[in-house]
Length: 391
Image 1: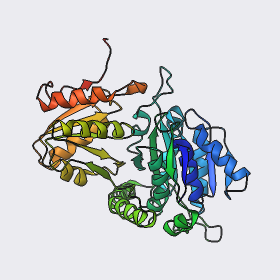
Image 2: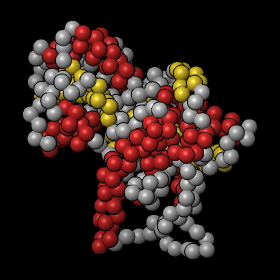
Image 3: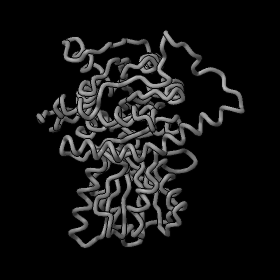
């Protein structure tokens, strides 16, 4: 298994190549463009046998992937920010058609005002479309989760499209050593995509995606809901199988980092995870019993795994790189719902950080955890904005 210096974006391209995608349809947008540029290079050099479709918009990119997946091809695309919003209508069609498409999203703040820097609002604005949504911590996970994403998405119990998201620049453009599996290993893990019962076939035509009357429509939505719940077991099984073949556990719904005996647990997604682990290690040496629970899959939300991870903690700090206006962060809303549903007695603090790429240092994270440990934070229902300037 060779180790290669790769950015998160190039790791995504290598993952799609190793997955033997057959159709790539994409439109360039910062900071995603490097992914599809690299895939175009692979195809041009004959290293990847696939069709690259140059489209006029992100909406068209997803439409092309839908068409390809509907006739049995393994399809991949990538986008960011405004491009994802332009594509949004077609995300619903892909999920409703139960098509196993995988898409990479390089997270980027939304306009106005214009920003090319990262936060999670673009991805989380699509959380109800029926797509499975994973957040990678680093370039290694970008590669691993995309390969696993095809296996999960194409599973008979799931058959839903899947997003792997990673943070702009911190992951997308930062180069680090990445273990790249050999092609024969990936081929064993991810066989060639087969046709499904609903695959379009000119020899056996049928009506697909037509009008549904009220007596039928609700069952279509329940089917997606049920399959999303089934995906939880499939995600864990794929992570275990990938570990067996590669020697690397790089998947699963959550990551439990020193939470088992923690009084305080921090919860977050994405690239901040590495900083939080460093802070947890430092504070542990100072006698502060803190742990970190990383949410790797936001959809399906891992309520059961999260509840078990935090069951012995007294205080929960949820770090959100997004804001649901009029409420709080999307991750915090899910955590509060889990705490209430499971009947857990916890203080849950919502913390907004890194919006539009706002810098957050390890010292900032350490200070807020120590304040929570000393019970010096404001009421848990008061939303905290980390490093917010005077307004």
